[in-house]
Image (tube, rainbow, N blue to C red; front, side, top):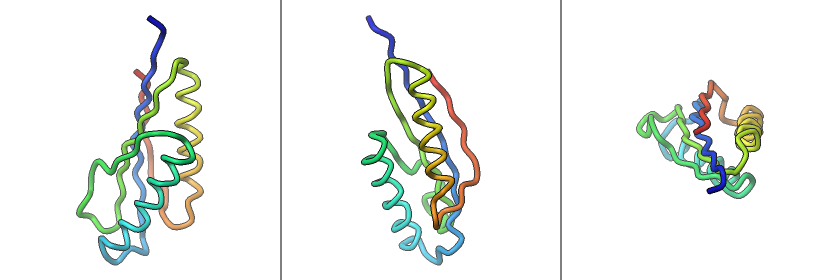
Length: 96
């Protein structure tokens, strides 16, 4: 069997300008759509669903080379750091 690597990244972001869950959802949906379409990854909000300003994303990527998966997740983190509305707080990444 060929090698298979799964990368999992948890990202926390703050939407300081969000005054409601509806405001947060607009930003969240935009981020999720861009990640899914631009990087071909799975994305889900995994925590803080009821917090109007905090976004916690779980992002998963699969590949046949661990370095490819690691580089892909790092590119995603870089893209999220440049988001114009949501402020990047931190990330944790694991490759299995």
